[in-house]
Image 1 (cartoon, rainbow, N blue to C red):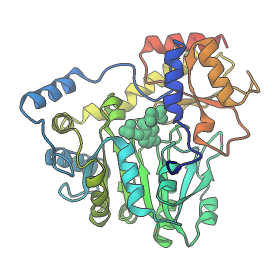
Image 2: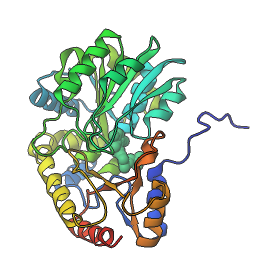
Image 3: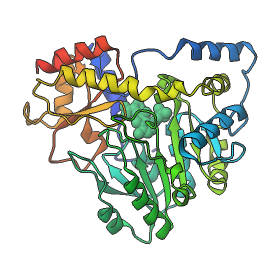
Image 4: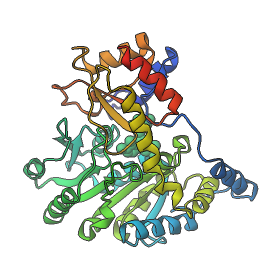
Length: 379
Ligand code: PMP
Ligand code: GLN
């Protein structure tokens, strides 16, 4: 019999709900991806890179020019210089960066603190390497972290804290004070940090993204993970990166080289050129804020309750006035009967007991958002 590495883990909710959406011909607002295309210029740059012969392996850490552009962007936005030759690695999406960063720091018996609801890959990967996830619950409606609780959950075995801001699924963003609290604890207790910043460029209402790169002592012990898929509307390309100080990046690359070795070469060439124009990422917040505002204005008279998301392209909707079903049953019924697929938030949160919420992805055309609102208003 094949050994059961992750006996309690089931197929990811994103795979389950997207499949169910297809089977029931439902509008798919579940898995987080845009239903519009990337900039044609970026697509042209990829085909140019292919036609120019960039079709063999990229360097193991990634195309140097792309690493230089990421380094410049981080220095401009966060005043922190990551050496492109030794402190940045291009990965197969943030998922692979997260996997490798967790593998680099977690040994059997170590504890890792997660804020739940948490993106679904953190917990199983910690377990895969013999670690124990320790949950700190973010509570509705604000989802702000309780640092006293974090402090109480730190033990001599705590080796890692994973944060995610802007936060999937709640849309909460960490404040400067949150990052300072994290920094103090991480330094004091000698804990590594993974800062999952995949929604770094999708942040609303004038909030500033508090990258771990902005906090010197914190950045010294942090792996930042990022995703081009979120920023440039091409989640299917599975491109991302990790930035970390040299000793951490060395440990990361030791594993990365045997995990994939390197990732898609022509896309890296294209991204290196495309990143040279800052408006390609700086305009994203206002682009998505308009979509959030359109969607929320359309459903304001529905029976769903909500607090507007502050970042990411997700919105939580509270359905407690509509049904007393569990969120999974509710989301499945919505897909089958009302032809709209969403994500039950308990998938991010095994401790969820006291609230009823589904997550909707608003990275959709305005027409799709209008159609979705029509369905939600009738529920
Ligand atoms: N972290 C978070 C918080 C996410 O929402 C996602 C999903 N897109 C990822 C990581 C993975 O990103 P990627 O698709 O680039 O692997
Ligand atoms: N990050 C995306 C979400 O939260 C999905 C990623 C995936 O499908 N694994 O919906």
